[in-house]
Image (cartoon, rainbow, N blue to C red; front, top):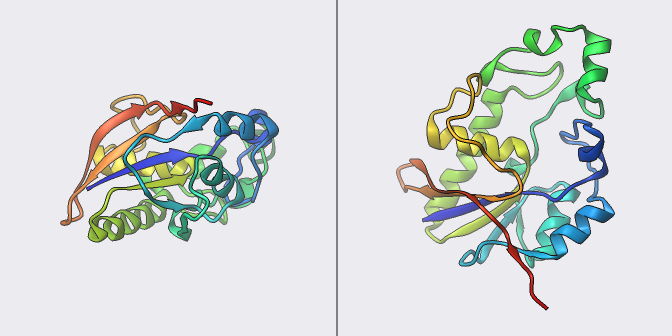
Length: 195
């Protein structure tokens, strides 16, 4: 079976470079306009969505008003760094703040979730969806797409990605009932909505 993973539309904090994490930020006006003009890849009718507002708004605008909310699709918990820009973090916590938080799957912001924990919950979600046996779509966050990509490619999340992941497009995975995850299609553009 296949699952298409999409990131939510733009927010004002995306534009400002602020880490949103679990802070419940809505789509910006531009984000709502952008997502209302798009359709997801065809063939996916069962939908799941993060409980965070920006993802739920995106799901509604893409035609999935009744998507099943799944907390495992929530964004990476960035702890005390949520709401800050990279520059603010470095100014407050030192030039080596990110290095001290760890590398790859061992990265963990202070008071936040480790990347290892994030990978486990994404893997749990994908296994559950695979057991249901029907193609699905999930509207979530950058951290969820990167984690799913890592699970499908064995990317260590510390070295450069094997191939560029376009966060404005869909990542379509093939899910095996045995828990295996592979990339079916990478960077599938969303379709323009015609009048």
